[in-house]
Amino acid sequence: MLETFTALLTAHLLADFVLQTDYMIAHKKQAKILALHGLIIGIATMVAIGGCTKVSIMMTMIVVITHILMDFIKLRYLGDTLRSFALDQGVHIAVIAAITAWYPELSSMGWWAGLAGHYQAQLYAGMTLASGIIIGVPLGGVLIKKLVAPIAPPPPSSTGSGTGPLTGMAQGGKYIGWLERAITMMLILTGKAEGVGFLIAAKSILRLRDISTDEDRHVAEYIIIGTFLSFGWGMLVALMTAKAVSYWAAF
Image (tube, rainbow, N blue to C red):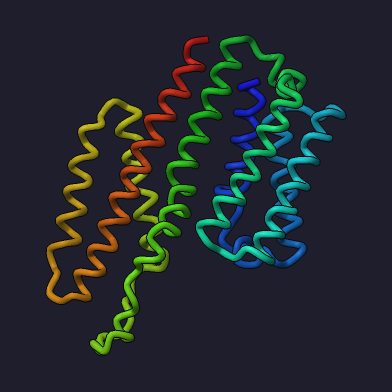
């Protein structure tokens, strides 16, 4: 059962947070882009469960159809909010759990079932690690961005300061967040958790050193809140990933 759930979850996370590009997200209301996303989900699912039997094809079609339907509903009616994101992902995970309960032996019907026992354990340990990294890094970025959106500071130009809007590297904050969570997870997974404290301290000092106005403080506090959420999420996911990977290591 866990093999099937792990494979389906890994395929979902890869399709939604790695193989789905920014262009696809921005143009997903177009039928052809949504169909392409569905195709990617289908291929990722088939590869992850390692099979092309009638049952695996049927289960894959259920995953693809329900995924596209939920994405369509979200795009057309729910908007881009934290609640809609949580509902969207919750439905996808619920479908995966339902399929796992319906056909727990799904993965044992595929190609990977022919591997020796210890190689199968390594395969699913790798899938678990990959899933943890995706949840911690790109998925975490989406989640944290939506969490801090209500406290985001207004553009400087709207406060009457005359300084104009803040500028910086395109998507710089996104990649900084990815890096800090990736490094946090790497430190914890390699047994160097004490290094996370130095990262947090360094970033906090960097962000708070140039405060001279209320606007600067709002921006700094907004970033620090996001930073602590980011590090906290990375640490939590890393600990859970280590626990999950250790299950497969026992085989």
